[in-house]
Length: 276
Image 1 (spheres, rainbow, N blue to C red):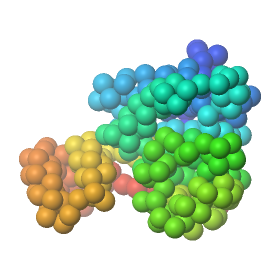
Image 2: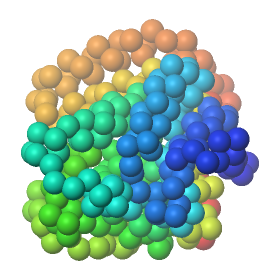
Image 3: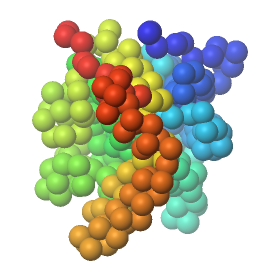
Image 4: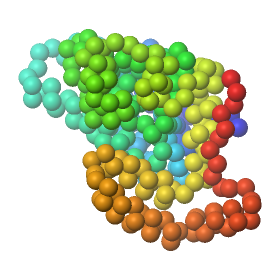
């Protein structure tokens, strides 16, 4: 099944939001500015995430950009037009980005980022918050903050060292150099690199596959993994026991086990990648 197009009833909005087959699709929709983040777009994403949390039919979330870019980061035109400000005023502007970062990181559904073209600055930070990152072969990633005298934000100081290691994170952040899709794959930032024509279909198939998975197990696994790098083994074993106890009491486990015993088609299966 081909990925559906997002609703166009609000095509003038900064975010296109749609739900189909258990997948909520968020499309950053400022293509003339390479989908750069401004206050309006951030607020729309936060609002959409609230709607997703309240909708039990949504099993996975797909995040992508409109046009040929993922996200060029914060809208530098807004920063340039803001004029002088105090440190306190500067800090206050980050509050909405902090809310966005927290909501994405704590999202209890799988989050898949399909990244085409540029993912600079905060755009790079956003994809680091995803559970699964797919890149097109023409994707270009850059921790561009040093280029404009800024500190990495949207959680990148937390996420990037945990993905690539501390020394490599320092190099990417302090140098502000651009990396391509294959280098990002080698660093573990991305799970797969695909031709641009195959990117969104592959992302959609992965997101849609979670419709057959246990929402309870998905949520518990995500929460545990998010806690794992700040925990010790005994803490994680305790968390594991509690989560597994709840999972074992679910109807899903009984039904899935019966399917396996009967050699029937499982409700959840990871979609095989097509040869490119």
